[in-house]
Length: 138
Image 1 (cartoon, rainbow, N blue to C red):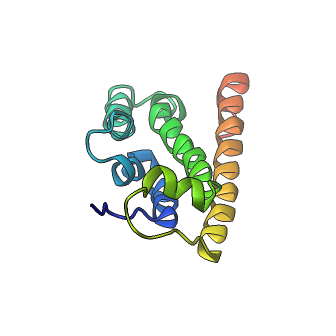
Image 2 (cartoon, helix red, strand yellow):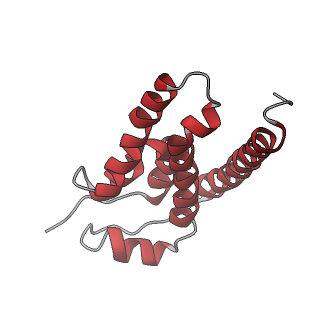
């Protein structure tokens, strides 16, 4: 019995760009995955909190979704650096195909590291500004 082959580059792409919504987990594990639903629920919950407290900084009220996006970046890196053999053993044991990662995955990982580091540094700077100066710099 052949199962559907799951592409590591596609999973990494989904985790990088749509990781905050958990679509990479749906791709890998299906709709029954609880972590995917937790990622997905972070957006409406954060939007609700932002709407209920509009005078508060969005960095605090939307922090659940921000954490979900950062977790998606970390998951993207974990998926991308997994060896092809380990990937196939875990996600493609009966697909009848072998994964062969190529340069698009390397470029995607470099972009993920850059975007994730930028987002993390920006979040730390903004939180420090809000906590130490009350938001005097923005």
